Length: 69
Image (cartoon, rainbow, N blue to C red; front, side):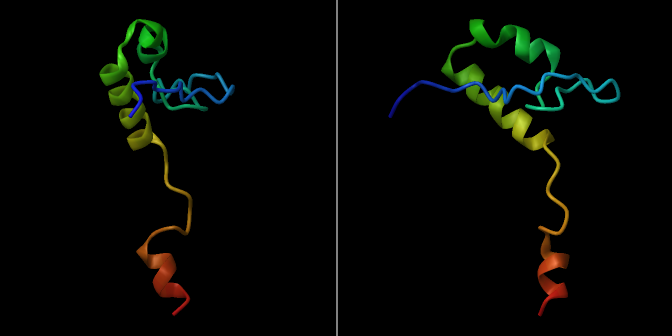
C-alpha cells in the first residue's frame, strides 16, 4: 500500500462565495493552501471531507430507482 495521496484538483479553480469551496474539487481555500504541507493522513482527511461536500448527481438516489420499477 502506498502513502501517496493525489490532489483532488481537476483544474476548475473557482471558489464559490456562498460555500467557500472550490467549484472543481470542493476543498476550502485553507485546505488548498495547506495541501503541500500535509502528510498522507491529513491529505486523506481533506479528500474525504471534499467528497462529502460534493453534491450527488440528480436521479442517483433510491427514489430514482423506484421510479423505473
